[in-house]
Amino acid sequence: MPHYTAPLRDMRFVLHELHNSADLAQLPGFEDMTADLIDPVLEEAGKFASEVLQPLNQRGDEEGCRYEDGQVYTPQGFKQAYDQFAEGGWTGISCDPAHGGQGMPVSVHMMIEEMISSANLAFGLYPGLSHGAYKAINAHATPALRDTFLPRMADGSWGGTMCLTEPHCGTDLGLIRSKAVAQPDGSYRVTGTKIFISSGEHDLTENNIHLVLARIEGAPKGIKGISLFVVPKFLVNEDGSLGERNTVTCGSIEHKMGIKASATCVMNFDDAKGWLIGVENKGMRAMFTMMNAARQGVAIQGLGVAEAAYQGAVSYARERLQGRALSGPRHPDKPADPLMVHPDVRRLLLTMRANIEGARALGAWVSKALDIADKSPDPAVRQDADDLVALMTPVLKSCFTDMGLACANMGMQVFGGHGYIREHGMEQLVRDARITLIYEGTNGVQALDLVGRKLPAHGGRLLRQFFHPVSRFIEDHAEDPQLGVFAKQLGKAFGHLQQATIHIMKLGMARPEEGGAASTDYLRLFSLVALGYMWARMAQVSIPCVGTEQDAGGFYRAKVGTARFYFERLLPETGARRSAILAGGSSILSFDDNWF
Image (cartoon, rainbow, N blue to C red; front, side, top):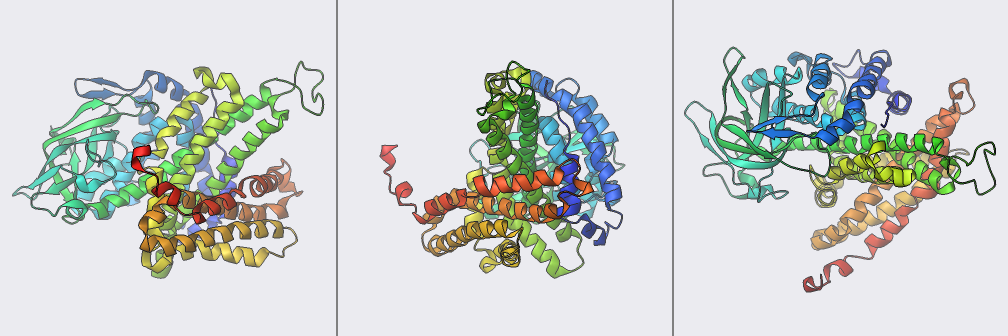
């Protein structure tokens, strides 16, 4: 049975030392958000994840969800764990206090989401989807709808979903056929079938609040004619109590490769009563609030799975005796040396560690920008922060989920044959991680979003929020006796990114397919540089602490050592990605369809 311990020391380093959490307390509404408040919250979240959620993970995978006569039942223990989760206030951790939420910063919430994802990814999907629905309703619904739904969603007694995909319509939402008919009382009757709906039906909450994309009668064709509706499972009486069952039913649940304890449903809406959110035919604008939150959440899921795989692999590599060190026995008193002595095992573990800690730092940087975009009183500061979030969302979603699957696979490799069987839990991590590269927009779609939308947006304005700080760091530290080696290597990689960006910007406008052919390589190149920037900054913070009392356990020495590994062994991949991009897309685009 695998075990999980929340990486609290590294989380505190990222929040407080690297990204200076004291800045949060300067934002209106976050005046009390100091380390003295944040750290105990993280500690309690870590305990809940390791003591309550993680022991249910393997059992939930084996049992899965059960569908009977339109009802969905979660695995044994999930309902009790969810009740504890809600009673502890975790469902409303970053919800508005006006709705009964805790009002914590997003940058703290994302650390908690990582712990949940490490301990039990399938469980985390239920409150995760609800929080995304909460954000969309809070941002776009009328005050009456907010008052009706949000307090009960914040306290966890009601859940939430987003219903986009239809049997004939996945990424291309312009093909949606679900329809909505206006009623004299201002409501709508919504009809259609939605598939792949996470948390569409379950037994954890009293009510489920569905956000549904549909087309109002007479609306324009395509994406410009889509509206967003809130459709509850149970209608709500004027006094806030639950009324009659709405005509929303679960037709079936999917039988999946992984996240088996998460109910993935076919949802049927048959003249179901709903209410418009936002403006007619502008549903995608409102839904993107939820989709972007979901993409950032899925990125953290990838990070969480990677951390769980790393912890399992390190523990096994320390305990498993197998072979002797190439330079001679390290433990002659034992029949063999631990796996940890073998160079290739160490390479796997360091690759996992470097990616995970770099991703945690990068995710925290972007989540801090989310807090600033939401709370700063300065419009220009809010715009800059929002630009960074918009630019980095596809990067995080793709980079972190690719990493999650890769780390799960590397963890299994460390275990060898024992990783391929259920007992140790590694094969479940591989299966669970795989979906994160697909849902909330496949990673190929994220790459197209970065190249086709984010790069040219506002004349390239979004890029400044990443390119400028990276450029300043390189210029400021290139000659530094200790940081210079990192700054110069980062400068070389950044040069590769700049060359690739110019190439895509030139060709992509005139020949969009060229940009599409380069998009995945470009996103990977961008990710490598972004992680490199985080590692250079982490080295900057850590080097002065090496050898001090703070470094008694070797935390800062390990940081600098991992930074060295990242720059020497992983960052050089930028050169190969740049070469692939500059080679152009001819070999992809000119290949005859009939040859496949």
